[in-house]
Structures are given as structure tokens and as C-alpha cells.
Length: 440
Image 1 (tube, rainbow, N blue to C red):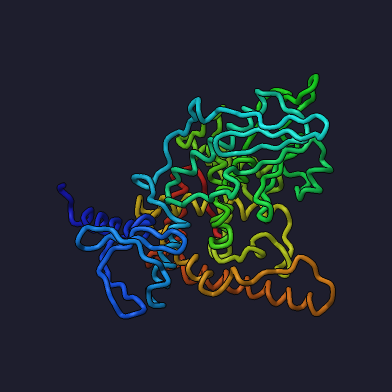
Image 2: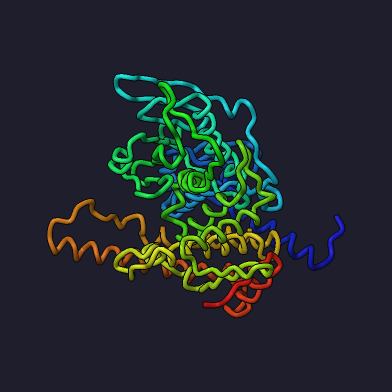
């Protein structure tokens, strides 16, 4: 392999970065010490509940109870296990497939229950279980299931190597509601085409957002083009549920918006049209009071405050108390900005950009985990002023942890560049794509 010095440095750097996140095995032999002082030289291969499996220098494998190791080594094993929950090896060249398409087996639909008296209808595909309160026509079930199954297939090959969640029941759950009242009572948001509930781990979808009508004894689609963008966005959240609390809000929403921007066509996601899909999402925002400007032949002008979006805790990003309330147009712009930032960092400097984004996400995840973000649990109900004050304190603590983690991890994305130099790189990147960034 003949490499120039510059290419050799990049190759070495990428090899080291990949090794840092290898989820299936620790890449080096190390000394492991038992509580009785005995030691082995071995490479950690996998962790399964209470046991760890090692490859000894002799070439033999050994499975040892984790409790037999000293505390420091148990911490190393626990860190290895946590990484394995979040990462897998990224695809070659850190890129999306050009197109993702389902095969006949991935489009199969099983009718589990069709109970007219109880109004309960359940259908299953390889990865999903769909439950409706009215009977759906077979072709409709197949059409809807394609949206979710192709999103699952696409996310399985995501360019960062994010590992997908594993549903406890074996299936990701989708609930469809004939009644808007039923949808709202289950936790659905008014006006939304669908919503993912982090509490129930289900996606809730009202019939009306799918453009359905009742024909004889089953519901069918009215016909015409249907935009599945929101469902793909929510499906991405569901598939990456375990990332939602350990990744910054800008990435969670920006990545989901990016997947939704890939153009969908009857069971296919076309990532070779991703940039066009992004522009269509930005243009659609013009109808919703977006602050983006249409410059005609020159493209779109997008005002953006990079630091504000990158460092925003979840409540500030969404305009939830105690952060100042935000108009809909401003929240929408946060989503648009997050999508643009995600796409830029995935391509900033070629493959090195995606590798840096991996490091950024791991640094952020470690920081919020070490600072105990998961341990800050808000109560379901508030019954008095003391509890209200305590909740406010806990929310403020969560916001501080998120902001500090963003600041600490940001060095990975900046890669030694000043804020001005980073924005200049972003502006040049998007100028080549007929999107004019403007500092806010």
C-alpha cells in the first residue's frame, strides 16, 4: 500500500480511532488481577451478565466471574460493557449506503390478532409489532410497515456505528389510533403525525396523519403522495432510545431529521438524494414561519448560531421551563440548525470528520454518565411547594451537567480550530451546496 506522508498520518489516526471503539473485543493484551492477587495476561473479548470472556496469550479462552477481579479491573470491565451497549463497528468509509431497500422477507407481515369485539388488531413484521384499534387493509399494513422496516435497515448501517436498541419484547412497538381522543389519551401530541414515548418505548400514530379512510370493514389510504418524514424521524428515536439521554439534544434531533431527509420511495430510502431532501426540509420550513430566506437561484440563506445550538441543554433547545419559552419558528430553526450541523460534522474533513464525531459522542456520554445524569430522576407528580422547588433544583442540575459535557466534548469537533475558523469551514461546505450560512 503506497501512501503519501499525509495519507499515512490519516490512515494511522483512523486506525487508532476505530480501535478505541471496538465493541466486540479489547484490542490489546493487559494484566488482570484477581482479588486474591493472582494475575493473567489476556485480551477482553466479551461481557455476558456476570462473566467476562478473555483470550489468553497462549491462544486459549477463559470465562471468569467478574466478582473475582479487583475493584479497578471490575470498573474496566464495566466500562467495556457500557461501550458495547452503544457502539458497533462503523461501515467502511463512514458513509450511508447509496440506497437501502427491503427484500421480500423483510416485507412479510403476520396477522397476530384481529378481534372485532375488543377492537384490537395486531400485526407483526421482522422487527416491529403494530397494534391498531380498527382493522387495517393488508396493503395498508404493508405500506406502513415498510417505512419502519427500511428505517431499521438503514440505521443498522449508520455511518457512525451507533448500536441500535434492543426491545425487551423482541419487537419495536407501534400503536395506531382511529380516534384522536385515544391518541391523545395515550400521550400523543396534537397536530403531530406521530410521536415517540420514551416512557412506554412506543411510537403513537393517529389515523388522520396517515390520510386514511374507512372502506367496507377495513381502513385504507385515501391515495396520493404521503410524506413519511415524521414517522422516520420518530422511528430513529425509537431505534436509538438508549442514546437519547447520553447524547446532546442537537445530535439526537439533528440525526433523526437527517435520516428523515433521505427520500423515501415505496420501501426504499435513497441516501444519494439526501442533500436534496435536506433542502426540501429547509424549504418546507418557510411555510411555518421559518427565519430561513429563499434567495432564488442563489439557494437558501440560513442564519445559525453554532455555539447556541451545540451547547444548549435539552430544555433550552426545546424552550421548556426553566429555560425561556420559544416561539414555534425558533424551535423549528433549532431542528434545522441541528440537521445542518450533524451533516457537516459527518463530512468535516472526509472520514476524519465522522471519526471525530464518534469521539465527541463518546466523550459526552462518559461525562454525563460519570456526573450521574441517569441518577437524577424527576417525580411523576408534584404535590407541594417543597417538591416543586426540589424538582426545579434537579432540572437545573441536569441542565448544568448537559451544558458542561457539551463544552468538554466540543474540543473533538473543533479539532484545534477557533470558533471563527470552524464557522468558515461550515460556510464553505454549504456554499458548495447552495446554502448560505449567516452568523446570528
